[in-house]
Image (cartoon, rainbow, N blue to C red; front, side, top):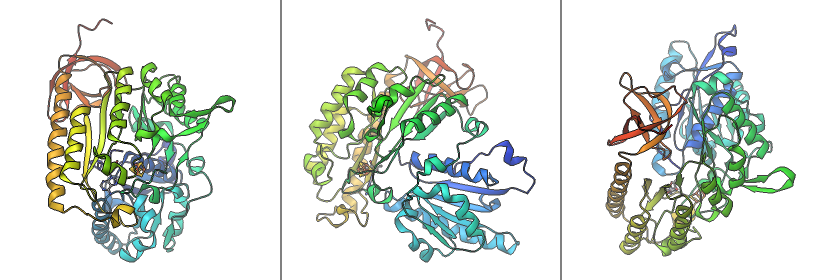
Length: 474
Ligand code: 5AD
Ligand code: SF4
């Protein structure tokens, strides 16, 4: 999963019905940390609050309700929340002096993992709510506004997705022509470095009908591309028509039938759950984009074993070979951890070797971060920070080189772009290539939501440039 922090807090959009209500609307500011699943959750929390009269604001000091949707994956991510709460405390004091209230909530994985502890460490917080309880958010907020301090982190018995309101058309449209859709939550893999099985609980798959209905609603509102999300998305399973057991592959075939939906993606996958139907989907479904985020974490078999990944470097390489044999243009992406306990220079060299043979188009790499409660935290052979720094630098230099090579290899090619938004300069448009890389078209190529063929003219540092492909044969 891509755990980069979104550049800015996400806006929560609300429907016209709310804007037209008589009582002055309260405002909510939601800041999202961490992965795409949190981005999706923040939208759903916004939808739930919209129903009880909240409108979104991007100005934190103007908010009646501030929600931090947090990430616990690495220590730094969790610590960020506490420093943000320090800043918010000052804002809240200033607002109270002006006679206005501010309710502060912590949601997401830090909320789930630390619960009560958050109230002790940060008394400014009014409510703590875990990811399984978001359908209860409006009620929790009401109680918090009456002065109750609330910690809601039980794994709810009811299905939150059944109780969370769907966004209205206007809200979907304002979020753009691409959308996330969470189909699976939690993880049963228990990699020894990872908090996810503890913070998000065991694997749960949403039912087929619920997913199809949500995808149809998104498509009807103008969404052209959906990214299916799950901590272990390719472990998704459900019951198809006639009681047949479906995996992610079958689900993708079904979603590809939805009118208007042109593109499908999914993330994040575990190598052990890439089954034959899913690989066949990459071969047979033009809507399934040729991009696969398949974390490997390490290239050393010894380290993979202590990480409890339950596959070897050779298994992973063989798998990629199989996928590439059916979809040669697939762009590979991965996650890496350097400095896991016991990692020697030779282990690290094996990771570099694996990277060299895969040739990644995109990648995310991290220094091992000790997470209390996970088996890795108590293992012998913790690697000194200076070694981790040095290894990370070397790995990132190699990955950056490969990303650059991939971008340059596209120059001169005709590429289908999904036009997403106007560019920064007048007349420019920004679109998304099949390989996820953003492309700037220096002239108007079509309407937002159109898929147009362009010709890549140059590869910049973070994006590609293109012009309209006038040689295109259609
Ligand atoms: N330390 C460093 N990186 C981690 N990740 C997960 N847990 C840790 C940890 N304790 C990384 C893995 C995972 C990605 C989402 O975050 O690479 O795939
Ligand atoms: Fe964490 Fe491993 Fe599960 Fe991924 S597969 S969420 S890294 S435990």
